[in-house]
Image 1 (cartoon, rainbow, N blue to C red):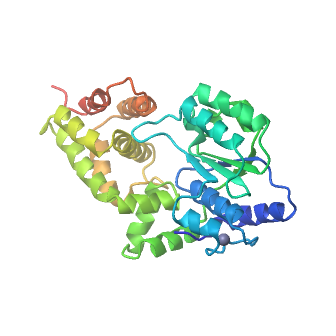
Image 2 (cartoon, rainbow, N blue to C red; image 1 turned 30 degrees about the horizontal axis):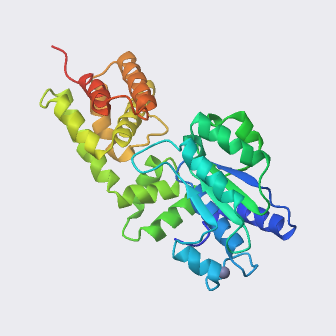
Image 3 (tube, rainbow, N blue to C red; image 1 turned 30 degrees about the vertical axis):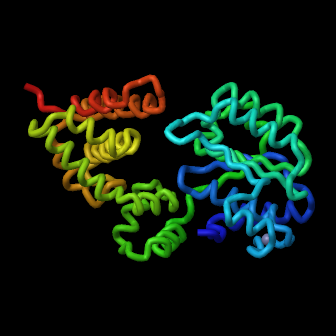
Length: 326
Ligand SMILES: [Zn+2]
């Protein structure tokens, strides 16, 4: 996947004309839902700037392009939370500041991608602020965020915002089917719905077998609700599947169940393909209790990133609520 994503053409054209006018800002904040392709766009822009052939598309031949495809270009830096962590630390930003104080190793732009920018802790964000206020020449900082409101106003105000809306359904569907040729249209539509219309997230879900995982987890939940298995054992199992992913599924099901309760024929159900199973569960739960469980899962999702909390206990807390009352 190296080409520009089709729904990103307007933003791309806009930046190309700014490059042509030598009017590119020092810092851009790319916003839009998770999986809409912000990081992909940023990489494309970085490649464009580091290609020595001054064309709208990178040539793929020059030294800069070759270094990029080898993943070793010294002037392209990607800052992300370290593996198994969810926070970008102040040390990472200090290292970046030091790197930017050196001149470009290839004599051109220095491009920095920070993804997701809202993963910076307060100290890291404050440390970045100095660079945003007085950026070195020929530097482009690209900050990605699907939660820009989580960034401090001082960071946001120093970046020009480029927003990516959810692509049109037909465009997203065509792209997804091209990426995942084995996918039939019905399943592609389902995954796209579940990914909130974000094509890259949908493609990831297919690659990771998320639909099978969802079915397996719904089996587990039905078993717990029927009193046929131990929520504590299931919490252990779900933790291995991913605490946030598990909680997102339960959250999505609960939202659908609420939709079913408040309208006889709800106009929209995200998990449409398993609606009959969800409807059976919903029939056994009163609306106020559904809302209560929804609150509980939202709270668990909010706490899921807190490293000092025991994730297994968090999942147990959610699942124990589904056991039948004696
Ligand atoms: Zn090139």
